[in-house]
Length: 593
Image 1 (cartoon, rainbow, N blue to C red):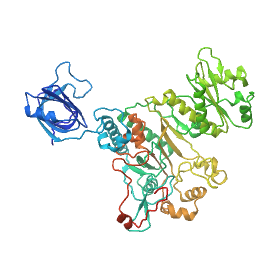
Image 2: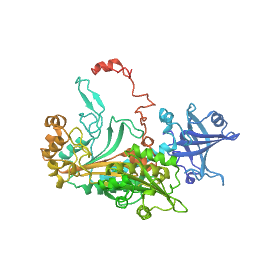
Image 3: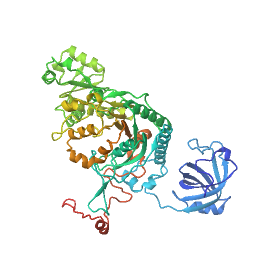
Image 4: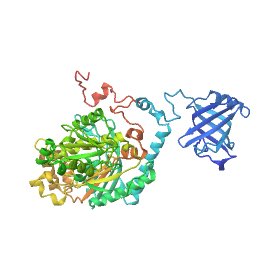
């Protein structure tokens, strides 16, 4: 080894020892006759002191040294002079008096500072990702990721799970997003697909009798671009046989609590995790990904306004549609311009308009364009039900139940952002259960699965598949944290006739089902056990535990929001010879050219 200790290892107990360190120059300070260098490696930093009187040759070399040079130094550990200790460093009580210094490699001037976590344009960071990864924040984030994955492996191993790798090259099947296709050279005109998830394979492992499987799985989805979405990502893939829903929820909840306690910088808000029905969260929060760190819940006021003089509300209630509201604390002094901004958000979410009431912070007078249509008793009842007080703003929506929930859900999210509720440093988990098996609206005369086609309906609802598919509830469950879905899973269909029934309802002919999923359907005829699983997203969970807003901050080499790699300049063109070997011709449209 080129060093005897790491740069974060030395303490007072090492004083007097001869040591060899190697690392990068984090910072250099020339005091005239004495040069101080903070030498850095992944483990930390150590101050080394080069004195011109003690080592003239070493001092001459140190004068050439600049930021990010790679050095090896040999010297003796010494206690820092009293009053000059650095409490912010693990090694802050000592320094190394240098006898010998070797420049292992010089460095060009980096395009941004490595020695401090200052704001740097993300495109520049991604272009020089190998330099960005030297920075303290990135090393911290990847360490959290390592600790989280290690905890997962140890936790599941102790509970009898077997880690099994599944293929990266697999069959292309419709699973919700576009596949990344890989052409086969030896089978011209045929393609593999990169797995969107190991969904089919883990179910086949259950048929194979492995009972408890997991994998830290790489997944690939050619999805439409979004700021916080990556074409390749990592998930904990897990499947169990002979289980019911709550067996899986209990296991994953225990895993999450332990992982947060082991690796997270952000504390857990509550345990156990609340278990909420899909219908409940939609009605209370307007979304199936509720953020429980704050209130502002959607509250129905239909009964209060049913006989008001405001025709929109009265007519909607008479037609069976709801009137609901949220209370934004401290926003009663919003200007007309600010209210117009909220109305634009409401209209984008599907509303025709936005009604509002504001309570004066001192006089408690209620103002707003719809006030004149309500009796005092009705206004007081609305504020009481919302828990609104002086200085608060009430936002009201009335339309179909679906539109109202989506509108107020969007406004709740926006007001939480404006009020800083999304910056609360805690992890608030909850389970969402009892999802509908199918989406509310049919597509081309067929039902669309709300999760995926392998999700089992509740056993009691199976007869409804023939009479009222839209009323069937599923065995799907999602784990949500701070408004993000961090895991999704379900009890699976393990019987061929039921799987065939679901495929027919979503528009697959039996011939198409056999072509796409024949391997699974045949497997179900060989004693498939009841089974279920879940797939927590590693990238999102680590980002939440690190307090980072974007998953790119916890991935070593992510793509941009445009799915490009600025460091390697990919995707890129390939040689015509390679295309010829794969029997591929590239034909661009005029616009693409």
